[in-house]
Length: 221
Length: 221
DNA sequence: CTAACTTATGGAACATGTTCGACAAGTCTG
DNA sequence: CAGACTTGTCGAACATGTTCCATAAGTTAG
Image (cartoon, rainbow over all chains, first blue to last red):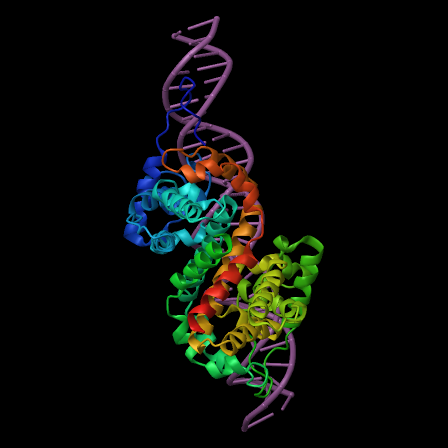
């Protein structure tokens, strides 16, 4: 990785910069789709060897996160209502919607502290959730727990959704699988049967978050 | 993939069976750790070429799921309390604990309908959640929504936990990142500061699930 | 101006999941 | 029993992320 610029500059001058790499990555994504964003393709776009990229970016994950930093920093909606539960919910939904719209986020978001790495408005959303919970009577620790449970739900929802509908065979297999269930051993599932698939398409994320909020605030306040 | 055995058997007899592959996979995992379970290593263990494995197993994901089927089918705890909310919570915790104990589950669980593929007691836990919710007054659709939100939370929790502590640099980076936050823009996060890391180590999964349960049942019943 | 130093670059190599095509090894039909 | 047919096996190949190392291209000290 490139050294810090505080010391006197030395060594061979770089032909490539981190910014150029990110710009090229965006071009490739816009033109070919993000699935085509491989290190080698990126190198070709820049007219540079693949190995060179590793001098400016730690690894592919680092690259994807850098790419998210801008989008997440800019495009998160910031108009939050005042009422505490609605405010927290709105912040969570904003985070979810933003990340779900950036498909490559799925590959890298499953980390504690991920939103902190995104910075900008992503962190403001975290602040909104935590600060609102505290203002509503939760302890700091409960506020952190609230955020983390919301974050887990968010990660799970995004990942399951992304994987489920990027995998046609999964959907098909699922449909028949619930029909095969034994009505003796699993009567409730059997009676739901094929409807599961239709209901599973509904968006229940907001309900889930609302429940977590209500549950946490009730316990605390 | 091997043909069904209903038609008269024909063709070259198989030297390898799906069961043998699974047995060998378990041996490799027990001996070398699951990270060493590569297709080629598995082939070597069986004295067979890597490509051969693909005649008995669709892909690596299929292999990992088959491996989970046994563990999840056998080892899930089944003594559930009677009281509805406690019963649903216990089922969720049993699923979480079982999957969290099988590290390679992380790679493949982010799918809708995943537990159905595991069969056995995994499905019984789903049945328990859905049936209990319905018995407690939820509609079928709300029961499905309840299960799905629990599932999302479970997937998120397992993945975040697994990735966070398999990645030492993530933990370190996180510690400093929260200290760097601007006290003007994010006062709540700044005042929590370093405590976040300690609190993030606490297990809040059960609280989250309990909130989702309470929230859903209150809306319905 | 030369030599030492430092950083950037990229070709080669490695591990991995996966696919392809040729070949092997049986069964079945006539 | 011979040829057709079917299925299993595996070497080779491909794409990908990543690391190593030799080399290039500057800056700076003498």
